[in-house]
Length: 138
Image: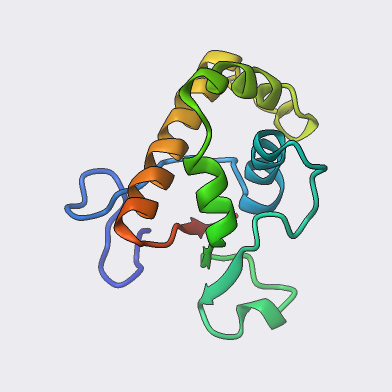
């Protein structure tokens, strides 16, 4: 989040409950694990992300970020409701999706740790009545 409203990054910023998930784009990569959790086919609109910053970036095909999207309550709740005993199996399946095949560090153990972070964030957000946001930059 460098340069966005004076925030120098997620790590160590007081009051920011976040997951550092480089390479995990909401509609596709995160959407795949949500589809696995819901046991539904993946669809581009499953996450229901909505651009909230900056204004006009969605109309500019040349814009490469940064931008912030808001994830739908359905996505938040789907993550929050994953039972802990399903996490290892979902993480293993997630680690084998085509979109992650280009990353050598996306092993099932790494994805399990990341999935636990996402699930924890979603649970805390739902309990607090908050939304999950994603800061993206290419």
